[in-house]
Length: 65
Image (cartoon, rainbow, N blue to C red; front, side, top):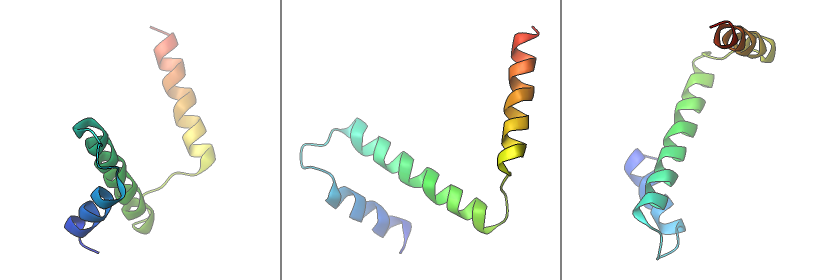
């Protein structure tokens, strides 16, 4: 499915009275999910432990200032 077709499908699923902000948010979420799937397919992922370690290092950096 092309990006354009995915957008059209998403718009069809939204209620007729959806605001521009709601439409924008839907498209942002859709784009983020697609980027995530692409990253997974390309092997650009972190293990749960790696993510925890990164979060811990960030938290330590924030609190030491």
